[in-house]
Image: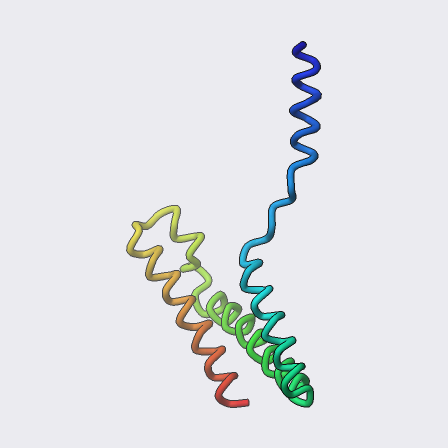
Length: 109
């Protein structure tokens, strides 16, 4: 009887629905909006993809800028030896730098 239960539980874990990645709903909304842009003004699709590429590159550049400017104050590294306020400050600093880079790229290009 135990062997059958073990087989059943093993089979049940294999048949479980796969877990969706994080922010799947945001991806679906973005794709629906992309289809809406294509339906309304197809000539704007290359411009939209160009802007998306620029903002994505800016996000990566902002992340690496933060890592380069503050190599010893990364949010995952200060967690070991500092308090919660320092961790929050490091996270907020990184978010502000990445957001500023994205905003600068979006407004400048």
